[in-house]
Amino acid sequence: MEERLETQVAVIGGGITGAGILRDLALRGIKAVLIEQGDLGHGTSTRNHGLLHSGARYAVRDPEAAAESYHENLILKKTVPGSIEGTGGLFVKVPEDDDEYARKWLASCKKLGIPADEIPVGQSLQEEPYLDKKIQAVFRVPDGAVDDFTLLVDVVADAVRRGAKALTYHKVTNVLIEQGRAAGVRIRDLLSGTEKEIRADVVVNAAGPWGMEIAQMAGVPLKIINNKGMLVVFSHRFNKRVINRLRMPGDGDIFVPAHDVTIFGTTGINTEDPNDFSLSRPELERMLAAGKTIIPAINEMRLIRAYSGSRPLYQESAGHDSGGRDVTRGMALLDHRERDGLDGFITITGGKLTTFRLMAEKTADLVCKKLGIQAKCTTDAEPIPDRRRKDAFDQADLAPAARHKLKNWAGVHAARIESSLKDEESGHIVCECEQVTWAEIEAAMPEKGSFRLGDIRRRTRLGMGPCQGTFCNFRASALAVEKGRATVGEADRALLDAVAERQKGMGVVATGETARQLCLMKTIYRVSLGFREEEQQHV
Image (tube, rainbow, N blue to C red; front, side, top):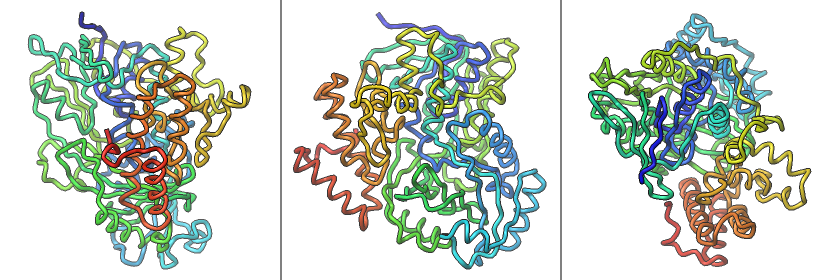
C-alpha cells in the first residue's frame, strides 16, 4: 500500500532556501516536510564561492539586492556563528578600472549605509602581500566567508529538532491539483523505489534551477535563467580577507578565503539544463587571466580542483537568451493564485546565499497568510546552535531514531571532540589533509540506507584537501565495510562515484603537481585496486 503523509506545508528543494523556509515554519509552529531529490545542497547551495556578501558588489547595479545583503550579513553573523568567519573584505581598484565607476560605487555604498572605508595602499599590500603592487585604491567592507555545507545541515537540523521532517533522495514526480488548488505532491524514494503521497495545504517551490520543472508539473508558466558559474580551489589560503575587484561585477573578480584554501571565481554562462555541471579549460583560462590583474602570481599557485553550479535568476520579462550578469540578484516570490489562478502554490527563487533567511521569512509570511495563521518570524533573533560547541543540538529530549538522524546532519563536530574520549580507533585520522577522524565519518553516516562518500564529504570535508581523496576515500570505504556500516557492493559503488567526481574536478585544472596527483590517483585505483576506466563514470 502506498505510504501517505499529511502536513501543512510541503517544501520542494533541499538547498539553503528550502532549508531556511523549513526552519522558519518550524519556529512558527507550522508543520512542514522538506523534499530533496539528492543530498542536502547537492545543487546550487554548495556550488558557490561561499561569500557572505556585504552588499557592496551590487551597490551600483542592484541597490535593492545590495541593501538586503548588508542587512542579512549582520543578522547571519549573530544567528549562525558556527558557519561564518568574519574575514572582512577588500575592494581593490587597478589602473584599468574606471575611475567614474569607483566614485559611483563609493557614493552608492554611503547612500545604502554599507561601510566602505578607504585604507592606504601600502597598508593593504602589507596585509595582503599577493596583491598587485600597481593597485591604486583599496576599500575595506564587511564581507565574510560562509561554510555553506555546515550552514545548510545545521539549518535543517534545527528545523528537525523543532518537529519538521526532511526527506532526502526523494524526487517529486507530480504536483497534486484538486479543484483549482495545489493539494500536495507525489514523490519517489530514489533509494527504495517506493512511491509516496504527501498531502499539504500549501506547496512551496524552492527548487532553484529545477524550479521550472516543478512549475510545469503544477501547470503554471515559469521562466528561470540558469546562469552557470565556474569556480576553482587553490591548495592553500593565501588571502586573509575576501578580495573583490572594484568594477562592475564580471568574471574572475572574487577571491574568498575558506578554511585552509582560497576559492576563486566566477564565470556566468546561461544553460538550459539545471543538471549541467560541466567544466571547460578555455573558460578556466579566461577566468585566470582576469584574476591575474589582482593577484599576479595566480598562475604560479597550485589549483586542486574546479566545480560549477547554476544560479537561478528570475526576471518576468526575460527570455533564456538574456545575459546573466544583467539580471537582478534579488529574490522573486510568486503567489500563483494571484499570478496564474492556482491557489496553494508558491514559488520562491533568485536571491543569494546571503539573503536566504530573508527569502524564507517572506515566503513563510505568505504561507501564514494562506493558512490564516498569525505567527511572527523569529529567525532574525533566534540563533542556530553553534556547531563548535560540544553541547550543540541538545538531543536529550529526542527519541533514539530522531537522535541518530540529527547526529547524522549536525553532530559531526561534536564527534571530533568526543572521539578523544573514546577508544583510540574512533580518533584515528582517516583524512590527513583535512584531519577527519573515523568518529566524524561514522557520525555523518545514515543509520540505514546507501553508503555515499559524497554525503560524508559535505559534512566532514573528507577528501577536500590537496590529495582530493586519493587515500582517504578508500580508507573510509574499507573501514565502513569492516565496521559493518556498508556492504562490499555499497562501498565499491560509493568509491567509484567519489573517484569519478574528484577526477572530473581535478582534470580541468591538471597541470604541475595536480597533474601528478591525478596520475597517482588513477594509478592507485586502476593498478592497485583494479578499477577499470569505463567504471569510473559519475553516477
